[in-house]
Length: 591
Ligand code: PEP
Ligand code: MG
Image (cartoon, rainbow, N blue to C red; front, side, top):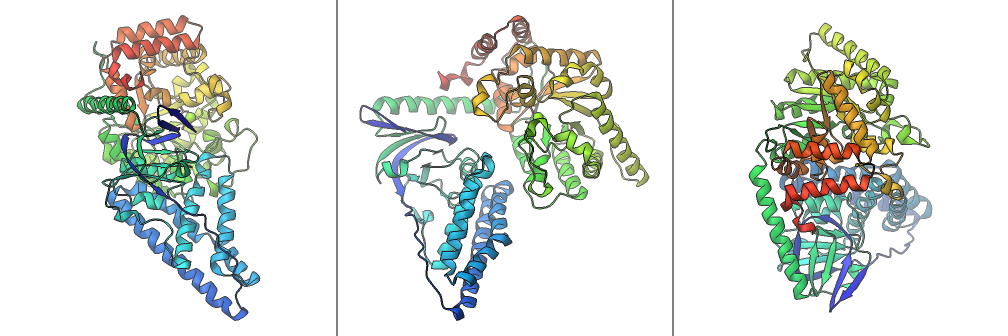
């Protein structure tokens, strides 16, 4: 959508990679390919199948090359993105369908492959889940490469040979093309389609190239040579920016650079308030590839290791040995800082294709997390053993997700005891004193926190779920997002009650949901008595920055006010006022 102001035009999309750039546009027109049906003779069928298989192997080699370059340039995690491409290439259903079409319909390999892959892409694009839907982009990427190889053509401009810096505008940009962009020449890019979790967006963030996606029709609206300013923070693309806009963005760049400098200065300092209260600040991670981000972000270890991602992004279940190696690698790398491994939290919006869990009407209220694990003791046992074995490193703690009542905690602990006995019998070392905590993310758990505290070494409040279950507002549903209020008095009371119950039994409480990484809300949590916060690695520094400028007494007064106020909006306004007064630099670019 474009708006006009004094000769400038503003297009609004989704900012997926932070930063501001300006320069001349280069539009990549990728004409829609029309692959006409070309009939082949009976005796030409075997050669056509061979031609198709050759194109597949050629594509496999190219993708592996790109993957290799990406691993070298960006890291293993980014390289892993291309595993999805390689898996699609290996997909027997897709390959067999194309071969069947060549044989039965006597049609060329390019036509058959194009037809089948378009169908796959359309099916992926229609999926409700955002993450899976965006895999359609990976399929398109692959289709272009296979067709290029079949037709011995080159459809996308070769961006490796640009000679002048530019801002790219295109309908879409494939992850493999994005991976090969040269930052010297590609200042930023803007695309018609795409979302936050597309692999193209992930690549842009890793490369540090500002990017705006979801701009609908920008590739047709812009011409080569147009002068634009691209704002990856707020998702704006401004064509022919006025002097006023250029000035404002100049200021924004300065503000961001100066904030970055301030964050760098305190990153490795302790998270201690002005009046001496120490808060442990840890990071949330999904796998071993996040270790670097934890250390460079200034976090004191890991407060939440979401282990389900080890189960989701692969074709088979990880074995005990594989899990052990990952947990041990993380623990060893971050020693002596603690690493809290959360046991499997599958279900809800996180599914694993190979576990074949039946679709439920209310997945968030269904067979999820600890419920699923207690019903699958063999699968759970492998994970418990793997975590226990990693605990020999000495800095591992473990916690159970979605505890709703005492029985679940006792059952899980009993299973853990059995695993310990097995390991003792097998003479495999583990930490006999490993702390085991319960997540508080269901109102029932918060309300019986005093009972749970007798059987747990610590609590970690999963506020994402605690808010959704308390307010009955699905955390993934935009239509009820206005009800999803972290400052609702009910949430404040549940957190307060949990903290009091824990402290009465002498155990500590952390928060590991999104609110822990929000500098506006962190002071409220600290005022409520929370001992530890755990957030995405990139959010640790801003939270640390505000803690180091905060007085515990101010945080306590805020919590006191929140405990008596009935209005979520008023509580939020107080939080914002304190945060802005305490750390104005964090909010300068917003005003
Ligand atoms: C939470 O619910 O706050 C939490 C940290 O767990 P997840 O977001 O993985 O459900
Ligand atoms: Mg949760």
